[in-house]
Every structure is written in structure tokens, then in C-alpha cells.
Length: 297
Image (tube, rainbow, N blue to C red; front, side, top):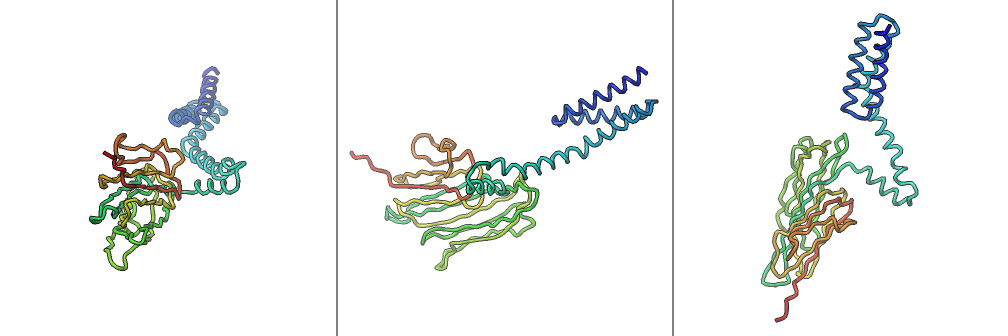
């Protein structure tokens, strides 16, 4: 009798332990495995039918805890998040703001490691005439469980602007058409480009690279705005690779917190700007330059 009571007490203890550790994944697995082992022992060794039934219950509970239960809980949480979260997050806000939050929650593709490299060079002896060369590259991360279509678009602004190169490459694009081309300068020069690709789920290790290269003629007192369209962008960086010594340049990110921007070097002419944050869809990077004011003797 005492042996049977010990079995029952131990079984109840394990059931309580499984319940307490349900949201501690590592310990929860061990407790569920213990329930299976102890349930098997009760079924094989106990003599009373009621104890054997308890053992069977432990076996079933442990098996479900290790197999079906985690998936049911994950599915339930996801359904609640999809159904309830939008209303909770936007409660009391104007409809237009709620629509924008809903749009952001639906975003599946995010640009990562966005890099913009700039070259400012003099075109001729005319000190007011400059050539702006821009190369933008990034990776695309698909956070959804399904392949997502992406419209790869590029454009050159201004009457003199033209595309030099547009490419999409990487293992992620193996199931869709890759693209890599160089546009030759001509009277009918290319200023717009569009190509569709598919991005597989790759949030752990994105294996793709998109590159856009443009050239345009500018004025020494001009400025250039680079729009980052469609997709939110993480870890944006701008590098001014080359410029005339008498030109001073600044870069501004369309981000709510200027303190998230690091500028290097700290003293002298800046040449590298990085944003420790995210650029939301339709944000911009603004590049401004002008001639340095010469000190009077």
C-alpha cells in the first residue's frame, strides 16, 4: 500500500512539475520525459488498476507535451497575435495612423546592410561642374515562411542622370531569374530599370545582393536626395569615397532620432555616416554639399 501511495505521490508531483515548467523549454522537456519514464514504470510494475491508469495518463501527457503541445501553443499564440494585436496596438489612434501601423506589420521583406558609396569628382576645369557617382547595395531578408516577390527597381534622377549597372545575385535567387547588366552611355541612355525576383525565407542567413550604380552631372552648390523606396532598411551606411578638397559634404538620414547616427571622423571633413536603427518605407537619405568658404588672409 505504501509503495502504491509513493507511486501516486510521485506521479502527481511530476504532473505539477510539468505544469510549472511549461514555459521553461529546457526544463520542460526533461520534466515531460520524466513523466513518460515514470508512467511506463507504473504501467509495468503497479498491481492496482487505478495506479496503472495513472501511469497511462502520465505516458499520454508526457508524449503530448513533447510532440503536439509545443506546436499547438505556438499556433495559438500566432493566431492571437494576428487577430488581436492590430486592434490592441492601434486602439485610440486616428484611422490614418492605424492604417500605417497595420501596413508596417504586414511587411515581410526588409533591406539589410544597406550601403551607399558616393564619389564627387570635377568634370573639367570648371570648378562648379561635378560628377556624382553613386553605388547602392543591400541584402533582402524575407521574414515570412513563404517565398515573397520583390520588384527590383532603380532610377537615375536629373536630365544628365543615367544608370551604369543593376544586378541581383546570390544563392537565394537560384529559383528565379538573376540579373546583372551594364548600361552603356548613349543618346537614349537608360534612366529607369525594373526586374522581378522571388526571395525565399532566409531570415537566418540571407544569400543575395542587389546593386545599383548611377552617374549624374551636378553643380558644386547642388544637392542630391537618394530615396529608399518600398522596403524598411536596417544598418544603413553612407561612405563618401572621394571628393574635391574644397567641397564639404553632409549626409542626413530620414530617421526620428539623430542620435542614432554615427559620423566619422569625429573631427575634420566627415566621410562615413552610419545609422544604428531602421529607415521606414519611403524614408530618404539626403546628401548635401557646397564649396568651403575660404578663410581671408
